[in-house]
Image 1 (cartoon, rainbow, N blue to C red):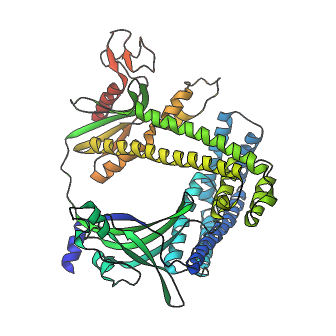
Image 2: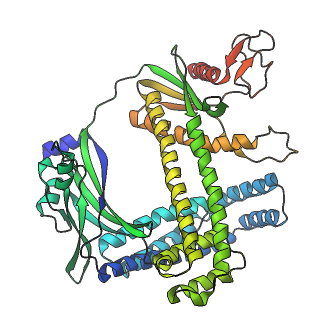
Image 3: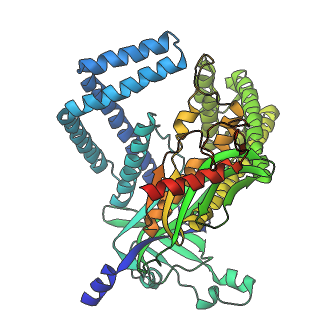
Length: 542
């Protein structure tokens, strides 16, 4: 035991996640559906508690006169249609005043949070759920609640008969051998032969990989309810890991349920110190449209040649298709609003009539309202049962555009992230330090009125800023630096940069030109490359 502890103290703990597809369960029943409904009911109860305490939180802040005055000024600027800078200033002032009010009323707000958590605990205990499932619901809710509060959004309730998940938390973890030998009471898999991943025949491998997953759906009155799913183990679980959690997910896809299982594991790997680097890398991040694509970043190390990170024109074409598909989807949704607004409720299914009437009663029918209606109707198998050619044809065209957009957007974004992750690895590996030009992207994106004295930011540049998503590249570089223990610093450079030959800031070229030419000495230089060299000089002075 002491040797194991010593090995773990010198090792690095890793999280391993393996996901596999499942076929429809063999013994799913109404009792399992009721467990998922209880999970949705617990979620909705937590939403009610959250909304009640948001009101109490606001009422508590309203007792602060400075906050109340600042909020009234902001609302007045909104209602009077003030200019964008004036409204932004009022909003910024309100945020600062709110932070100060939160500090002054910290004890009252802390007491509110304690009471909210007590109500969450009571709701969890009264839910009638198995502990593995209610812990997962509360954990997911708290994560979503934090993200919603940061984004100043609202939490939505669940309607039931929708996606769901069953969670098995294995206390203390279990080895992979125990998962296959049947000693685990919560989860087990029928064993597969070793040739399932090593046989020379691909067809034989796929046949041998077919097996069954048995997982606990819930425990009630001391009786364990186990459900069986056919599963294809297309790759083995790492033998040196411990399984901590097994989650079975159910999602709707193209009118049918799609099942998956995820194994969350941990393992201790030997920690190997990275070799000390000797490269001091400087990075200039921005976005600039060139003939071959969109230049995202330039990085330089000493006397090495500069390296340019470029999203090529084929990627820009793929991203432009996202906008085209979004425009088509808006057109289809507008057609759907007109179709469902004129639909005779008497001709529809009885279990959907009330929901369609609610949609038709809306004075302003938004696309998001129609999407919510479609999701409900899909759950009720409305489009498979109604005999209306116009509605069925519309739903087919909507599904085609929606799935096309969703899949294409996912693949395009993943392609960009893959490039950025590889770029981060190239920048940080064998680096002694990484220095990045601290460009204030948020200030560049602020919309300014025509009468503003500040620099104009073209609409096309805003579009390329979204395409570039430079914040993703920055995040990947910073995460890689933390992982490899490489110093990471940001330096803000003056604008414009002085001439590298004579130090003048006078130019013969436009300020946004890639190649600059000095007015006095006629020297020429690439703006991005010179920014990297200036970062190296500034870093040497620190």
